[in-house]
Length: 397
Ligand SMILES: [Zn+2]
Image (cartoon, rainbow, N blue to C red; front, side, top):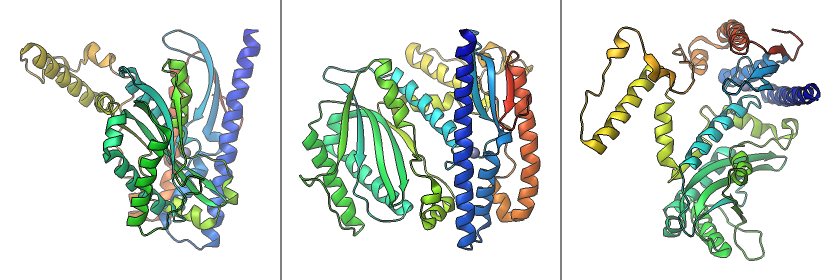
């Protein structure tokens, strides 16, 4: 029984990896085609497509069986990548970004307490499609959000929450919407929609866009769903809120001009944010998860001392480094989040291409990938001693 359960878990992981690879490869090939047909010369864009292709190679994806949970010893199956391109357009890498957001949101939720009359709600905010490019559409919706947040109505009704943006690419263009998971007072559906619609109208006017709602009552479509405040009740919403780009349509079907536009975005915006009462926790979290262990240590110590000083008035030397000076970081470090300190990056890949050209970059990149994948394989084998791993192209390690 145990074995058959494990086997089905493993084959599920394999299916997930397979579908990511197939979606990733077909998307990258669609992009490649768009670049060739439209004679795009921008080397950075070519660099990005190459990175996407490499990230979605079968040899980059692993599946593993019998990994263990370091606390409970429980065994499980998993899948992942050996190296990652980090692009928000990559089906393999976007998963990591949404996992990070999910973690941040869970932590913020842990620190919330509902007051009398408050509830958790899941809200979807939509706008009429302005028929603009993705970047312009995003500017418009961002403006609508700013207007909405400044309203007294918003301040009275919504105490805090998370906002994530999602765009669906379809054959008819983009559909942009926001998902909120928030703590609210009772929301009257019509009143809420009226406020949101009003902000849309103002923003559309500012951008000189015609604004027409296709609904019977002439208000924007909004969905409001009350959530059960139990962990399980919030789980689905957390999942939904941290999904980002939906990939309902295959990229091969998308207009090439849209594809070229999204790959040309040099810096993708942040697609997830916490606001109001959810935000306070986020700042503390960011500090505690600083990628540099030593900085984390100092910052944590600083916060602890400040809190102690506020509480007791007792002042200590804040940067007490006696335990570090002899190279021993002692248990304080071990208590901190289990994160490998990252090495300083030499030069971002975009900058490298600008300075040295694409050809030189691709050579360097191939070398880098080999080293990264080797290191990752070693790391996995050492961390999960009882596990067996193989890549999708069938190589065990
Ligand atoms: Zn990737």
